[in-house]
Image (spheres, helix red, strand yellow):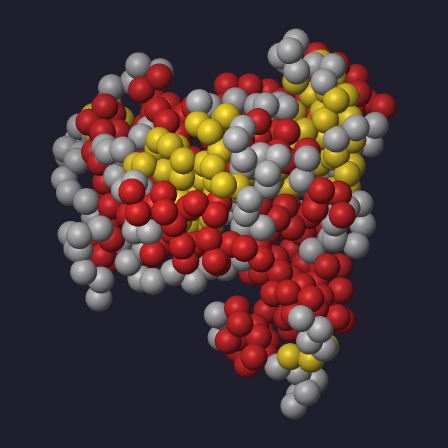
Length: 215
Length: 215
């Protein structure tokens, strides 16, 4: 199954976890790991792990396991983390600022080079060396800059409109934090983080755990 | 399938989406909706929707559909949003501050009443009327306050230790933003938001979309 278009959403979700655990092994100075050991660590079955990684090529050796550094590097490449992404953040409230200030994103190639907001109290502020621009100038900015990713931190009412502007401006991917399911053409990558949905799932679990015995 | 313990993770993920769309319908003044109309809006099949909602009781009427207000209220109850949660945030950097400042969480009952950090530059700051306390005093604080939820915004190295303290202190749920898979007992609800994993999934999709034709 070498055809990249056929990679399932489930694998896309597992790959960043592999990367996270391999990065952890690197910090511990571990050089080799078998799929069984990786299984104990990550919690997927060894056969699942071998199958997932085989999707992208032959990384392990029978009876030897995986070289941690090499596999980490390969997964970075598969995840598209071997390049840089010119990124803009739209909506520089609390969450937009938190994302802009998170140095790890820059380290792995997500360079936030443009910030936009509609609030006159925020426009002109400098966050992590980038000055917040008026969102009215977004489309003009996109015509000049070749932006890869737009991060949506505006409210739900404005999110789709901003995304439409970003897509007209040529971005390839949208990282959405607005509490809305956005519509984008097939060729645009869309990843949404619905924080409130996540919190609601937590409260569901609390409600259903509390006062009742688990199996 | 009325046994609450048996509710699948997939339904838990869908419920907040139902709530989100029903809330949207309320803002539009829509009073009634059929499962077919809901299907067009949400993107799940009508039979999926009927099956999901039947898990929790009889909300619709044959040939009539669902009453939006009533169903919204019921889903709130199912999600445990008919009560309040005493919440603490541990780690009041950019993300912890963003969460603390997000007024929507208070509106739906998540009252952030305690903030903790280890950084002397942050301890003593007042965020949304709450003074940041020294994390050294967390366990003592938990003995006095009956806290429901701990929000983890510390780094990966300290996350498990903080969670262990919170659990000893009697919290019922953990909302985790640290890039680590935490270990908690079965009776503790755990919900993790791995932002970097999400960004990596986005870059994977960009890499695999760009320059290749989709089916």
